[in-house]
Image (cartoon, rainbow, N blue to C red):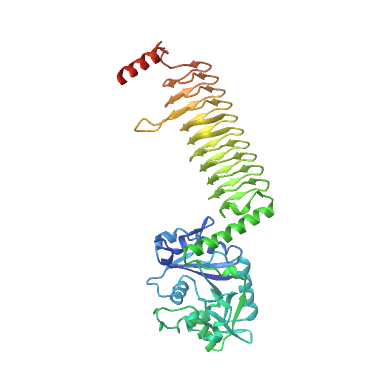
Length: 459
């Protein structure tokens, strides 16, 4: 069944205490608004209107292409927001789904249930509700002979109504024409001076129209108004993500200590250890082992690769490559098949060739290194002259001695060597040994003369 959708995303979220519009806060790799849009993917949505307000310019960037974005200004309550939302639709005909932009735990399955019940019952409105052990603070769904006759806010409920545990989630399916007519009849005669969408239910009941409700799992009714609530829904979303991956064949030593964004991809057969954070568009291929203590952001990890105690941002880790412990791959780091970036190594904007090893204590920046090359400990590509960055080119099968400074721009040819402790400022020909160090000078008797001088000073 095709529907039109209005997402209410204008709130400021003052209780979040961040200054950021509520729907721009992130949970498991998506903004709250992003989750609301994601929930609609499996529905037959013909038109989508998103009502924005606070930090409108920033929220627009989170709205999907093709959505009608309308601004609620001033922000006079949910009823007013729905009225503004209708202006983003071609007309008020058919079924209109209204949902808040701050409830990321709602599933497409539950939304479909609401729509199907709405269609089956012929109701003017269908409410998504949940049953809470403690309903304090929530609007109670009051039924008579199974039909909804009212939604009563907690502060307005009498003792009998306070005992009701079925509460409103602020998700509704409406007959569009009925919604538009009822919105024109609600008022703002309340303590906040705002127009409430819940008042539409009372108007419809007064007109003798049917209002139904569909009860869904209680966690789906969780909205986000505070940092605590954001943490709670994030935990649930992460659990859903890891549970799905486990079912698909991803191994995790301790799923509660693995943090995977909804936008990331992990193939069956991958192995994830505790304190692994998989962020953004990161992809992890089958057979890769990641963790413990790894943070990957927008990074591709190839099949059979191993990443341990490392941070990688916008990097590519090739098949069978080894990274860590205590390695840092910065944007533009590309590691070839079977290569190694080891302990206390930082790589930035550099290509590390197939089978090449940078085992420890090195900085490789703005460089290209060929295949089967070995970079000795303490090597630095000196890429910045104070004004501009320059590249270092190192060929295949090169042996760079420990503590070599490669002052870019410089090229080291295939099969070349550099002596330990050298500062290389000129190109090294293919097969050559480059050695740059001052002759060693030994001062005989130095320690004894120094001891005698110290004893004399003390005397």
